[in-house]
Image 1 (cartoon, rainbow, N blue to C red):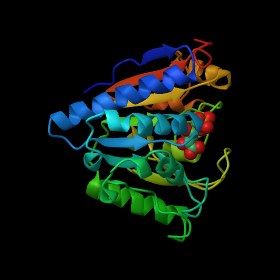
Image 2 (cartoon, rainbow, N blue to C red; image 1 turned 60 degrees about the vertical axis):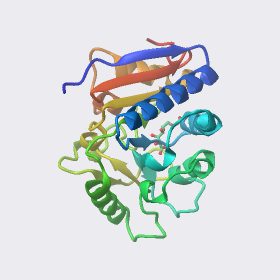
Image 3 (cartoon, protein in one colour; image 1 turned 180 degrees about the horizontal axis):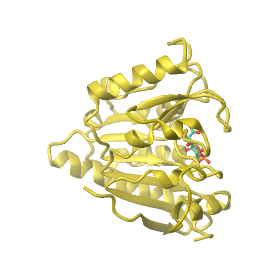
Image 4 (cartoon, helix red, strand yellow; image 1 turned 120 degrees about the vertical axis):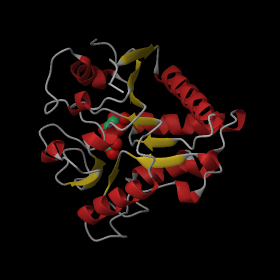
Length: 243
Ligand SMILES: O=C(O)[C@H](O)[C@@H](O)[C@H](O)[C@H](O)COP(=O)(O)O
């Protein structure tokens, strides 16, 4: 299926943005499960993602989502110890996954720096897990965007932007600390029925505008390089202010 043009959904503020995304995600999971599917969701790190996770936990009891039949992955992870507060997985567990009845076998974390020796080992193990347990596509892949236009841990001008025939790769010298990470590649991120970018705040406005401009460079603005069958930009007015 060819990638459709991105859809922009604007909201007055971060609270209404997070509420809408949470509602849409719960609806989407319920619909997938009503089709007999076990939806695969790609989570992301970052501040607006954490707000979303908390909102999902708040709404979970009012939804008919069977959390034991949702498979969770991460678009990227920091290569730090498993109990580090910098871990995207730890943040997601504290905000959401510890508060809903997930099946632990369906929560696939990237190996941590106290579990494997190198970020390359972690990327290889995560790629193998995705080959074995992934459905080959995400029902919804969620992404944040940095002020520099990065998404996941795909940073402007970084060599991993060129990675081909790979699912997850190691990132070193990340401009956003911590320096060592694991990220899904463009190829892997694009295997998604729907890619959802979520951005809040004036600080993202210029990057969002670059990402959505008719012309531009993926190397300079990696968020331009990820599109699903459907791509939705969930924005508050501050993040949309340069459109
Ligand atoms: O591991 C990470 O750092 C995230 O995956 C990263 O891609 C994040 O989503 C953006 O940097 C936005 O983060 P904020 O929402 O905190 O600005």
